[in-house]
Length: 153
Image 1 (cartoon, one colour):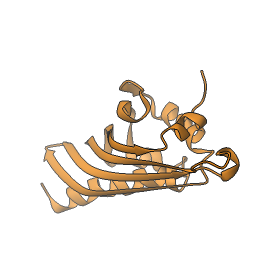
Image 2 (image 1 turned 180 degrees about the vertical axis):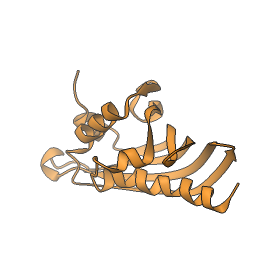
Image 3 (image 1 turned 180 degrees about the horizontal axis):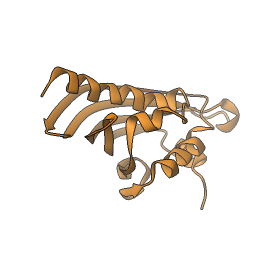
């Protein structure tokens, strides 16, 4: 494993966090993910793992994160295993999400998720991209807040 590959893969996590923390849904998603990609947020949102086109995922992100006044994702402790043009990455995450007070009726306004990512990346002609994102939540506070902003079906 080259130091350059490792650095590029870890940088994907910073860009990944910036997509929602900076609400930059235009250029960053294509610099971070493959199209399509596999998502597994079952432990957080109860949604079974799925393969999805990148454009569909971006639109879901826009809708889900629009109500939040701010979010902050800290992703650390990256353990990277590279095998040719494929990589597996384990990292720890602490993600905080704040809703405006007018949406919380005087209750708590912060949804906290603590856990880890077990992601996969592939080397493409444009560099490393995440092909699979799996978030495992080990602890949450005020998880009801995310249900309040999820689009209803």
